[in-house]
Each structure stands twice: as C-alpha cells, then as structure tokens.
Length: 294
Image (cartoon, rainbow, N blue to C red; front, side, top):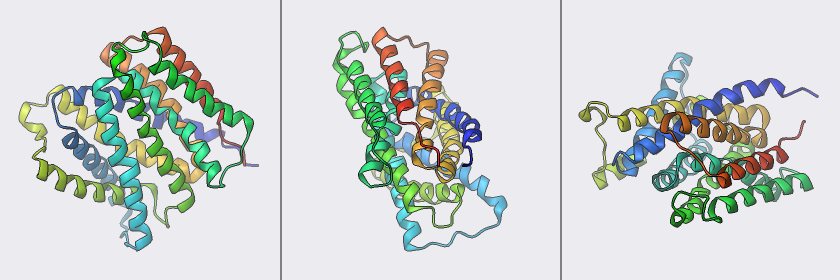
C-alpha cells in the first residue's frame, strides 16, 4: 500500500494560495464592481495563467465530444455557478464566514460519492456530514453569530457553492481527464468560460476596465483572484488525479483555515464565539470524512 502522506505538502500549498482569494473577493465586490464583470476577469486570468503554464509543452489540444463535455461541466460547476453564488454571498457576509462555508466541499463530496457507488458508507463519515450541518446551524441560528442576523439567509446561499464544487470533484474523478493534463483541462474550461462570460458581460455592459482607475484595491484584488485561482485550480485537478476526490476535497479545510487567517490579517475581521465554534466543528467534520488509504 503506497502512502499518500507526501501529497499533504502540495495540498497545503494549494490551500494557502486558494485561501487568499477569499478576502480578495470581499475587497473586489465591495469596490462597487458588477459580479459578472469580476467573474469574467477571474476566469479569464485563470485561463491566461493556464496558457502560460501550457505553452512550454508544445502540445496541441485535440477537441472531442468527451472533452467538450468535460470542459463544460468544469466551467459550470467549477467556475460560473459557484463564482456567481460566492460573489453574491460575499457582499453580505464576513470573509471568514465564507471561508467556513467552503469547508462544506468534502462534506458534500462524501454523500454524493456514496450515492453514485464510488465510496463506501461508514458511520464515522456520516457523522462528519452531520457535524458539517451543525456548524452551518451555528452560523445561521444564534443571534450573536453574524454581525447582522438578517444576513443568515446568505449563509444558506453560500453553501450552494461548495455543493457545486462537490459535483465537479466527483465528476472529474470518475469521468477522468481523457488524457489531458490538469493545466490543459483548466485551459479548456477557462477558455470556454471566458467566451460565455464575455458574451454576457458585453450584453450587460458590465465589463470592468481594470487599468482605468489607477489600479485600485478592488482592481488588485481581482488580479490576485484570477492568478491564484489559475495556479491553485490546476493543482487541485492534479490532486484529484493523484489521490481521488475525497482526498482532494480536503483542500477545502486548508482553504478555510488560510481564508480565515488571511481575512483577519488583510481585513481586520473579528468573529464571535459561535463562528469559532462553527469553525472547530467543521474541521472535526472534515476529519471524519478523511480519505481512505488504498
């Protein structure tokens, strides 16, 4: 049985990098920019990062129906839907709370994997899913959990984003990459997403010329989101191929941890005891759904 322990190092690096996007998202959406405009730059810059990583390979990506389906699935469930949901919720919630909701990814992955017959039901894993539900209740239940209790509904909206990622994670793991590398897969899905968003942005008139405002904090945040997303996402798809969807889903724990830390450092956020309790219980839930050793 080959140990997976060495994979925790790239997992930590991916989580720390991806965690930077959470406070950056807060800065971007509070800068007054339209969500579709921000999302366009995120997907486009992620694709540009993938292109720069891809060019030295001197390969041609041959398109097929199977690959187009793969690109479309990742585009919808890995970028467009969770991106629109996250930006909407981030406008109303503290960045640290958004970081905690991201931790629902591995907790959602498990029941989906069991339902599709790719994972085996275990009581400890079911308990992990239950712990995730408790943590969400702590975020939306007590009046003291959020700065504005009226925003509790946006927590429920926010957890739809990790549900999307869970669908994407399982699909990639069991559909496969059809011979593509993680960078090529990201390049294909990001190119498709950029085209779709470019049409939407042009129709809405929501394009954001980043260079016009002298590179404000919101502009720099958008730039950071796009570049870190490209690097982290490529690594995430690679981890799925190396260790499967449940192990890869543990990156959400690290995104949560670093997202909270980056939010405290960059935004000066403080949290109530209920939020810290939700964070601790969510971590326990993720521990209980940890991957099996093959």
